[in-house]
Image 1 (tube, helix red, strand yellow):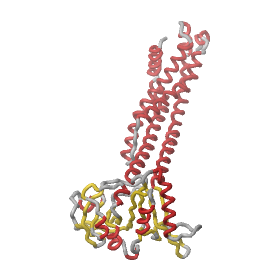
Image 2 (cartoon, helix red, strand yellow; image 1 turned 30 degrees about the vertical axis):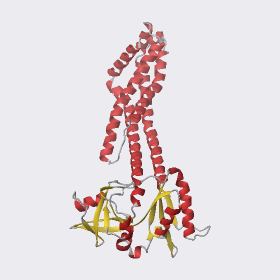
Image 3 (tube, helix red, strand yellow; image 1 turned 180 degrees about the vertical axis):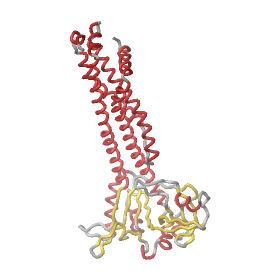
Length: 410
C-alpha cells in the first residue's frame, strides 16, 4: 500500500462514519478556534499598548508635585505644588541628558462657543509640550514663546472638543470662552484616541502656561510660577536612568531637602511603565493560549478513544489486509493517517471559526484583535501534532495484531 492508497482508505473510513468523525474532531475544532481567538485578543492588547506608547512620546519622564500632609491626613499626588518654573528651567539648563522640559498646570473648565458648551480639561504649558508629547497640530499652529511671555489668550483644541463645539465646522480663528475669558482658536491637535484606561486624550484644550495660571486655573488653586507637573524628554533610552538620578539630585538641592528626608516630588518613567504593561500583555497572551490548548489535548484524547474503537471494529479487516500481503508499517500508516486526517479536518474548521470569532470579538466587544499567520500556523500545526501523538498508539496496536487471530475475531 502506497501513501496515496493510505490517504484514500483514511478518507473512506472518515466518510463512512460522518457523525462520529465530526464529534471526534469537535475537540480539535474548539481547541484550534480557542487558541486563535485568545492569541488574537492578546495580540490586540499588545497592539493597543504599542499604539499608546507611540502617541505618548518616547523616552518620557514625568515629575509630579508632592503630597500634602495636614492634620495627620496625607493628600494625593500633586496636592502640594512644590515644583516651579524655575525648577524646570534649571533642569533644562543643567541636566545634559534632557532634551526638552514642558511644565504644565491643568484643571477642569467649561468652554463655550455660541449656544454650545463642553466640559473639558485645560492644560497650560509651553511650545515644548508638542515635542515632549509628540503631538503636532492637524490644523492651524502651535502657540510660540512670545505668546507665552505675553500671556496671550490663544487656545489649541483637542479633536473631541473641536467636534463638540463646531460640529464639523472650521474652528481656526473663531473665539471661544473658557471660564468666561475669550480665547482665539489657533489650532486643532491631531487625534490620539483613548488611553489604556479608556480616557479620551483628545478631550483637551491647550493654552500658554502663563495664561492658564493667571486667567483660567490660577487663584487659590496655584500660586505664581508653581506648576502641577512637568514632562521631560530624554535624549536617548540609554540615558533615562542617569537623567532620573541627576534630576532627583538637582531638585533635592534646590528644595533644600536634607539626607534621610523624603522627596517632595515624584519622578515616573512612563516608557518603563508602559513596557511593563506590554510585557504583562504578552505573558497574558501566552497564558490564554496555554489554557485554550487544553481543549486540543482533550480533543486528542477523543481521537485516541475513537481510533481504539475503530481498531476493535475493524479487526477482521486488518487480518484480511495482512493475509493478502499488507505489512505492519502499512497498517500503521493507514490508521495513523486516519487519525491525522481527523485532526487536520478539525484544524481547518477550527481556523475558520477562530478567524470569524476574532472578528466578532472585535465588533461586539469593541476590542482590537490581530489574527496573525503565525497563530494560525501554530494552532494548525499543534492540531496535526495532536493527531500524530494520540493516533500513534491505536495505529501501533492495529499493526501488531496477529493475522490469524484477527481473521477469527467476531
